[in-house]
Image (cartoon, rainbow over all chains, first blue to last red; front, side, top):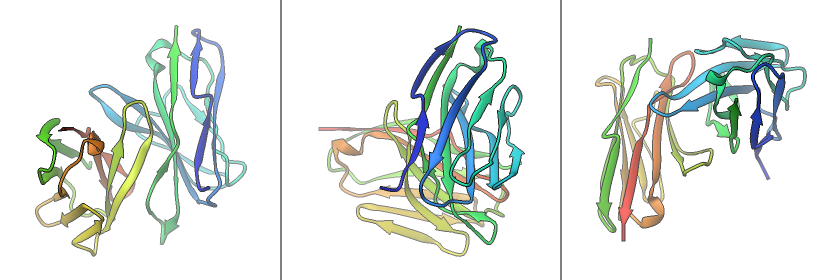
Length: 115
Length: 109
């Protein structure tokens, strides 16, 4: 089954404790991205990647890191989480056709609470 | 900078009604326009994608149109059902996707 998986689905942590949210897709998509969703603010892009070893900042990259060492995986790293990073996080992937993203497939989401 | 707006923020209709959800965008140089559905606490599911060269796409009871010149897209849902209740988001962009904040649809039995 074609899908985007994220782990963990739910996470409660404390300020400053490094964490990683994993994202994996099995559709051989070139493009992957991370979003956060907050009430009243909608979906905002954190980072995206056009291919292996190619990553770029989205609209709200501060406090986050990503890596793309393999085509299927795109982990999101919070080196020192803070309470304002409490949010619902989504990973997404899509094909690129002539450099343009096609239909985006979303993971189920990771709900993060930073105390 | 692309801005995507969806009005209304919430809509409640009786079952069986045909309805239209609206999406407007400020930059007409979009590559494509996508409509998604999000159920509470769940991820987004792609419904329809309209390429910039197309004017509409259809899937079952759903029909999405795109008018780049006016900066508008609509999602038409025919014969609405309670199972259509969800938040519907549109997204468009030229360099990257920009999402609207969504319209929360409730279809009452």
